[in-house]
Length: 496
Image (cartoon, rainbow, N blue to C red; front, top):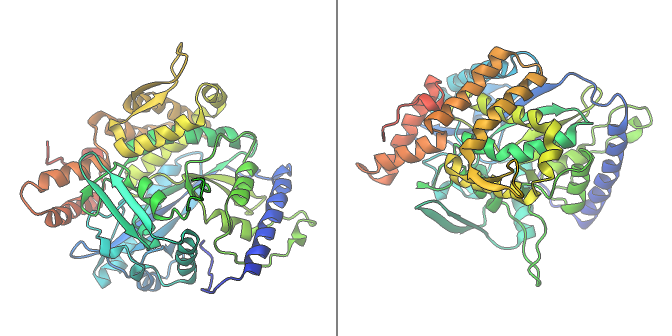
């Protein structure tokens, strides 16, 4: 989706050619992955941070293309909406102090962004959903004026044929509205973490990432307010799913699989299954052909497979398989469920916990899967997104015939050791592991995540001011805390 694609109408022949191309490429990919030298490079970790842009009145600032022109830095890229921006961080070796390296670069780049954005009275902010966002901002008027985004909006709506229904119920409040605007999806900003993965261990690592994702999202939750309402702890999850659900039921009530998905089952053998699944389950949305010369296959070079990667980028699983032709080629797992914010330290602690759990559990994942149906993992994911640290989830217990429902806090506590072991396997230094996992431990001990802090602060502020003013005040408090850089568990809690 990051490619420069011009806005044009596609013909039936375009779709037919593209569809044939991605089916051919997924067959090629199978052969490429099977090469002995494939994925032989050092294990690396990378990340992408999506940011909001806001003005001095704590409203959105739709200036991303202007800001990119001023920045002149290719690590910053546009996003779907004009008030969002993406920062692509430099991949680093997993061994040593990777999270500290990424933290340092993030802060350096953020400070540069801040200095440039200040010139046009704009402030960058890392938050899952902007608390002051209004329904008027969720229209195509705010979509970034680039071909690939215009095509995406048009084609998704064309496939659905009627407005998207956004209906989200929180503990006490709810939102319920219809929209024809795909720009609603752009309300969600995330911190997407990438882990290079051994092709022979990919299935185990990916399944472990799926099983442990609920713990990661519960303790990382930072999207508690949408349109001035306190909703799910990680409202991004349900909003993202509903905002680009292009499926319409047929006469029998059956629907195609959602393009935003937790997945369709445990991976059985390897990464190729996920690429093949995506090609065979989902119709192309952007049938753009890039005319790669696939003679490189006969020359034993690593092909780009641009069309296949483009198609993968038009589906949004919460954990995604990534193929790259860099070097000898490699596979990655993209952890997509983590929200942006509250601070750089919080985000890298979330990534350390997520990666550590996936690697730490990979060797034992068969034991867990035999006692744990995939649909239970999916249930846990949505329960954790809705209730955060207050959730209870299904989890297998020793000497029990079936998983039992227990507080997610208990599982997170147990998973801290698993994460520590996993990071150790990757060669992450002890001091680095302690630094970032202690941030998770502290969040668990205080019971304060970004979502809990924002929701409770907003409820407190409402006692003395109108909701709109309370949201603006909340955002200013959040912004000041983010700029100070201390983990959210150390922020002052005015409601206590």
